[in-house]
Image (cartoon, rainbow, N blue to C red; front, side, top):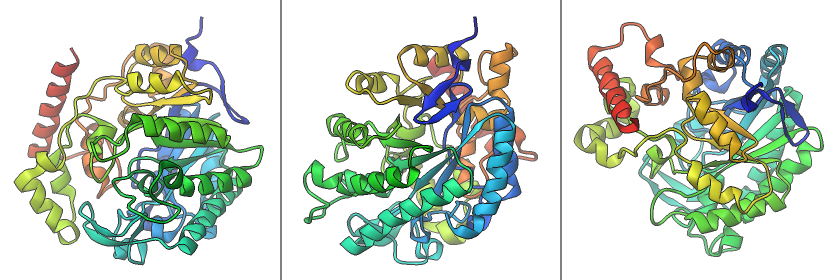
Length: 414
């Protein structure tokens, strides 16, 4: 009997050939904020490798929402190249999704072209930069930007859009009391803090119409005491369900405060520092050398590390749920699907091997060779995301860091 992994499923009006979705992990392959041959080659390889749908990561809905030069910026002139990409994905039998978002205060003027903006103003130590609070007319303008981005995604041939409402980006900055200190109708109570999200999702649903799938990635918790906790996040999920979204991706963590809560394991600090632009990030490079583990503490890794949290959400929701978080084996995937999740998202296993899904289906392997050293994450802030086994002439100090990290993970999951 065919594994449930390889049975079709529906996300709103869109039918996927199987239940594996390449998650929206940042590729850093959109050089000069436009599609590239690397981006094309990677996602078509993932589609050829057997996924039901692949997600192009974190496309900014406006220039003010850009946090990296290698990140897509949704605008009319890139639609033809995106259409070539979606056509190629469809030719391989997979569906195409694109994650849309706005980084809020996690950027620099040199990248986003203006003083960074957020739910509230102040100093963002992650960048570091000063940000200004959005005014109401600017908030409404960004809502329109989300709608325009969905329309561009439609023209580019995408089947689904995934709205990023987690991880400390702009929608999440409005939701979280840690980053939202507003005194107007967009701050204070949870209902007020959800107001921006509600405006965005209503606009997205309107433009998506009845033939595009709408997925929202959201937090089950922010990962630290002064952030959102599970009870409030559950209310956010219920509101998204009421607004009619087609599926939720249940994640956690806050990039500027608890980054490894998102990804688990250890950040490879030597790798991060080695590839970092010294001119642009001298302050962070120095900080990593002095107090790296305090700045980016390790969070224990295990397969399906969000599953118990996600099951508590599943018990109180009727909207389809997509599981994300540490999927590396056929056994783990089947366990997640047996728990009632409509589909699951995979990233690092598909960075390690774009043919992972086909190999699981054929029986060539039962488990990904990804050792979760997080080398791919350490380099992605500067270079394209790539697994260490695909890198030639890697410095010995980085090779040792990878080996040690994988040994630690192997011991912890025994």
